[in-house]
Image (cartoon, rainbow, N blue to C red):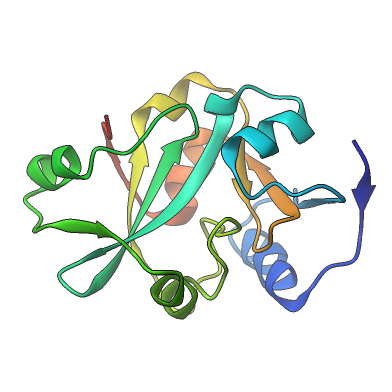
Length: 160
């Protein structure tokens, strides 16, 4: 694995958001793409389930952040039913960029233009260290489950 340090402004905002939340700057930048959970796990040398995907969905015109284990797919019908939500749809890349300020495949759980309603996959609790996108296809951050829950103000839920 090759680590680099050539941050862009988005990644720097994520670093600042971590520090502002009282967390350490754990952002790492790599030469290889980490745009998918499988790619990230391979580059980072961890289980794919320890990748916490920051997935932006659209629900009644509003963004919804679901932090989900890379080991499975989100059942949006289940999440909607459990939380009394309308239909949840996969957001377009433009919608994601507008509401997250970050590209699909690199969305971090923090540093969005405005706070996002968030849900955290309880399956992630089994991993002592989680890896999340950090604003680009070549940046990831590490964080514990409880810290991720706190910093995102997420609601814990089953997602599959």
